[in-house]
Length: 330
Ligand SMILES: Nc1nc2c(ncn2[C@@H]2O[C@H](COP(=O)(O)OP(=O)(O)OP(=O)(O)O)[C@@H](O)[C@H]2O)c(=O)[nH]1
Ligand SMILES: [K+]
Ligand SMILES: [Mg+2]
Image 1 (cartoon, rainbow, N blue to C red):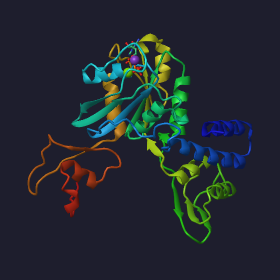
Image 2 (image 1 turned 45 degrees about the vertical axis):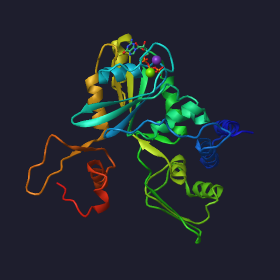
Image 3 (image 1 turned 90 degrees about the vertical axis):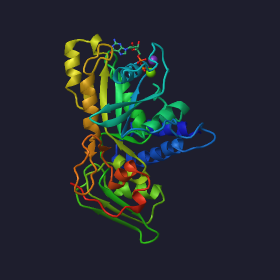
Image 4 (image 1 turned 45 degrees about the horizontal axis):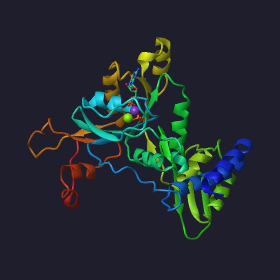
């Protein structure tokens, strides 16, 4: 039986199961097989490496969506350049840079083939691993179509370890060579329990480790901590083609969380989309200055969340960080 079939079998079994404990075991197994599919092997096609698109600009935004939702059209509207938008499917992979408030933001137009990525299908897998390099994901949807598209995309991204609009679970996990398992919690666990967690650890042959749980996590979140290479990425749902739906529908979508409505064709709400991108990236502008002088306010270093002083050094010059001693920060 191949890994894909094994995954299918576990998913079917999970649908029949009721106890959190048993579910937890199946989830752990499932996570392991999914991981296997993403690892480079010779038999299941190309490795899970992304498209070789050079990272440029201060932040990277990935556009993900089904074919013909309007990704290329959006890109060409935002950058005022023609990116091969066409009324047929599977046309493009393009990267464009837009400038906003002094920041250079790279937008990736990924081909509309995410479906099946978690089952190791080559190109879909590439799309997904490129998405993992993004600081923000825009899930682009056709407002005239059903929300089934959104669920499919979310499922695919989830299955390959991308966690949308979530933060890393507050759990400390340390492997040891001896000493057994130390299990501690600072909160009451209501969605999983110690027995489930211990059985999962045994399933992963982890017999010596320290665990400190500081948040009411689910079993899935615990598995995420164990597997470790999850990407926590902010995401906005962008519903395009609102020129073709009723005002009531537009209103409803616009009010749902993390969702915004646009029409590329009619140029509706595109400015708002860009300012929202900026906001979601939580960009910070840093100005450098010489002692006793005023900073040059026209030339910021733009950072996004998670950046460090080292990031600032590297964006000024490669040789700066190795010789770095201290920084004064206002
Ligand atoms: N009605 C309407 N049509 C749109 C809008 N935006 C794009 N389209 C049309 O939708 C079709 C597909 O647009 P593309 O930009 O090529 O779609 P894509 O997402 O890049 O598709 P792939 O590259 O195949 O993944 C084109 O015929 C566009 O003219 C919009 O706001 N309203
Ligand atoms: K297209
Ligand atoms: Mg396209």
